[in-house]
Amino acid sequence: MTTLIDQIQCHLRLHVKLFRGGFRIFLDHWTGAVSSSYGRSVASTFSIVLNQIVLHPSRHIENISYLSLHDKAQIMRWNSTAPERVERTIHEVISDQVTSRPGAEAIHSWDGSMTFESLDRASSILALHLRDMGVGPEVFVPLAFSKSKWYIVAMLGVLKAGGACKYQSFFWRGGLGHEEGFALGRNSTLTEISPSLGPSPSSRSSPTPCSSRQRKDHALLT
Image (cartoon, rainbow, N blue to C red; front, side, top):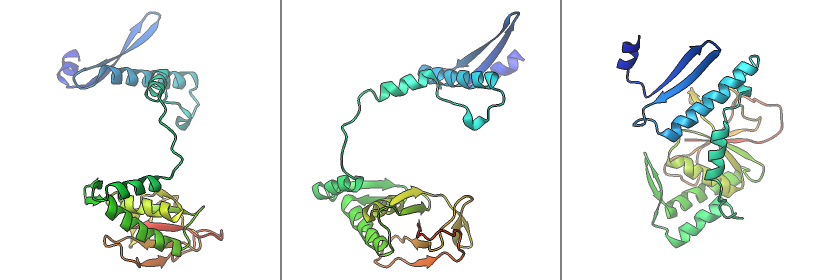
């Protein structure tokens, strides 16, 4: 058994050794693949999870804490110096970059790049369209498409319109996105974002009411 284990290239191994008075658990790792700090983090996480399982065997897995004292201390060290609070919105900060360096690259993505000027123009066109559709304060807009440079445009457009956004992954069925646990309201509207971002993106109403509440929701697709 020892020969077989030694032949297997394991970056991290867990050893359980039995003694007369109990047992001990050891965690071995290759420092060339797993750093010492990361190895300690893995060991401390394993320890706190195992202790909770042993002491509370009926506890559901979603109620088990994975944050060890070691990791908590590390997080506190990382955040020991708090950044200066900025009382501005993210799109206002980006607007400063548009003014100071419009031709600089703002987005570098797998599907292309955009300058601050082009990002500002595209997101502003979308924001105007969303406002015409009723997007504003207290309106939630899921962003339902694969992450790309257009995700940033959509997010910024929603924020400029005054709404709130959240990434929402969709399974595509018959051209309309659906995901378990996601429902659009009675007056919901799906808006497509095309790469050209013309002034009148196509819209279509949700064919099947999914909620009895009288509200208006929007989902951005691409």
